[in-house]
Image (cartoon, rainbow, N blue to C red; front, side, top):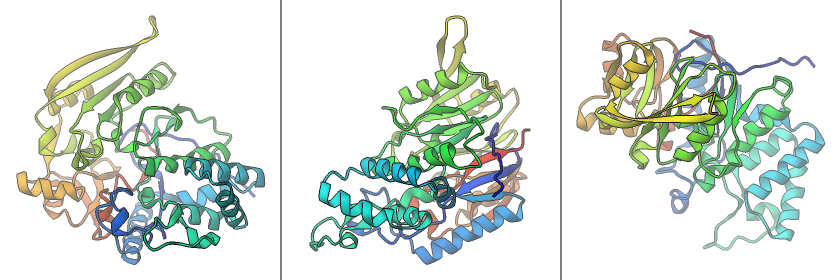
Length: 401
């Protein structure tokens, strides 16, 4: 069987999107119940049939615009095809899931290991109930041995492509921590990636949390990171030392200190890049911000951090060497509503051409008036997970601009 040799190449947010990684929502959505929504980081329960239809439309739009679409679940299944790797993966996943009872662990391993690779991947993503391995479920007890992973369709967060390398992220919440095991095995063992010598700028075993929604590639030299509810300042500095001291092209990392609240979960929920000089922005980060500009002193072999307080447009203009336009998602009431449904979370598939949720019609009209080409997709169910088109996609390769 012939395998491609794939490289990671992401040096912007807007260069033509060549290859992207998605996860089609699966049975994990059906395992959401009201009692466990907060624990699993959801506010509501999407209707899976409609969510899948909406997600298929998203993938169809990408393909129609020349984007190669890969699926997380398919790549992971191929990566663990070898029996030894499959066993290693399963042992690591079960350990990460906190299963310690020996009798339960043995039943679980026998149950999962007997499955074909793709079936096993789908099952551990959807969750394993006690009654599936012969354990009686008391009505008032937690029913899962392996918790479902409903956040997986937001492929942006468990890892991120930056330059020619990746970050394998240490997720903030325990319920999402296991998600980064899939890209770990894909990039290490999938035949398309394993010989590509792809650098890993940050690893999932790190103490401090880092999530992909807080990682934006503004240019070949400038990165923007959110110090947010989900990403620790210390993690950004560790990443910064790793990438800035290497041989990639990046020179500066701008750390945006944003509110530590669910409505401002990640930087990309309040700020995304649309074109060379245009950005969506939520009104609450439009005014003066505290921003740390991080560079690397190669002689002293240490980071240099300069704190700045300025308006967002001034900072972006300074570091991108061009005038920029910030586009608000409507007035105070409208922007609050549409930002909750990820009006600012756009996915650029080329400069000035973006995918958005159709429900954010005010934002979409404003983007259109600013000469941004908008492709709006259905989103009544997908949006219940509190993530937009950027959250649902992980670019593997973009054309350089």
